[in-house]
Image 1: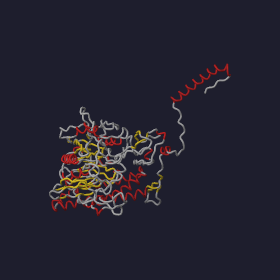
Image 2: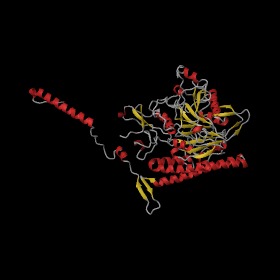
Image 3: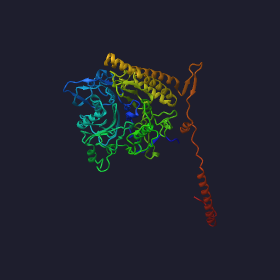
Image 4: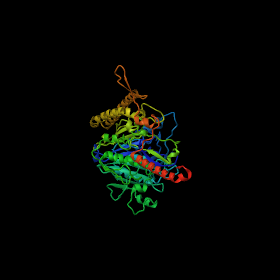
Length: 621
């Protein structure tokens, strides 16, 4: 039998306790390891039901003595309804009609407002502000969980609102981390779920936090009172890269080293009074506070970390296997060379290709190498011969439930040049397009739509169609997708120097408003160009690949049809050639069989001689 790229775990007969792999992956590259000369960070927003829109929240001025509303977390469409953020995408009158009569998102508390709040690009998790403060996010399991205010608890902040307040009020990574930590300690922190089976797996959060000079990893979870928080942050060395795949990665902590660590004052006390740490051994944040999966299932978390680190430094001697806490994995590693935005895009499109865990190989990938592995469903039961064993599919960086992903690109000296490379839907089925932080509005193709209705004029839906269709004939159709990706992205990269030079000129001659209009129009133009190219791609791949045939040579008198066919190994595995004959015994087995036969013959002869006198025959039963 072929060896599938699976992980063996022990469970009961029913498979309903399957781990929800709808969780995000995030990378951070230090400034000196980055071709931009500034830190880069990423986010794959992985969830089957996220509100996939992005929006531009404008800079706002607020009345003296006013308060900022803190809404209750809501992650599905519409994630927020109201006018507080100042973005038209969130206005009640702009929510999709015909499904439900949505009202304004509930407010669960307030904090004092500041006079001026900065503009930023917002998503399910906020992304980047106009002063080049940028985030990535990955949910992590934690040993403590809390409920929000109005829902039976006392906590006011979830990670999305902490990050939004930080983008509104701060310009540097350190300032953002300190503000988020202070607010969470003062007002309380809660995770993405506060009811049901996911309260522990959703209780913790990681943010990557970058400015033009520094990159940090920020971990947070509720404290044991449900009304405060525990948090820690570690700076990423400038020549290093880190990766988080839904597992805390900060281990040793030294809060006296303020150049590299920040943290809450209750960090050690909460661990000691809950017996997470004995107070004598070296303190390990992840060991103390993480809520890991079992030994085998945890590999779908730590293996993404291994993959990124070894892609960034192929000479790294790092095993793909570790314990549930990733205890022997480094926090970060030095990259083998300078990494570009395109390098990071390639990492985000990874399915463990050319490794023992390659999801494009094996029986589960089907005859055409589809790397997607879907949820098992609620009614799957293991056969009796499984004896309580089941398997968990590998979980790649490019995951089929991704709502969107991005790579940030900051500028060392000019915040007007800061942008994100944004890709709707799954990384391997999207084209990344530049969206500048200073735009007045994000491209229309990215700021509307929902999972409630298919729409070809929404970037997410176009890429979802391509991803699903090309996935069916992956090894045949995906090269066509990759070719268009390269053309679209290469053209966009090549154009940025001119876009930015023109922005400088317009700012000097016509002022900031004209420059913002230019950056907004440019971002919209690139999004439309990518959309047009991918719509043409969709028509192309449907024309060329369907019904088991590959069609080509359309300019000739008679087009060519070639059967996709099936690999011989796959036909054997599915029983196309009938049952396999028993394999012939190996040499060792044959010798053992001969020896056994001779011994039995000798025994028969001896027994026969003994019994011949009395019965006249011998029998062996």
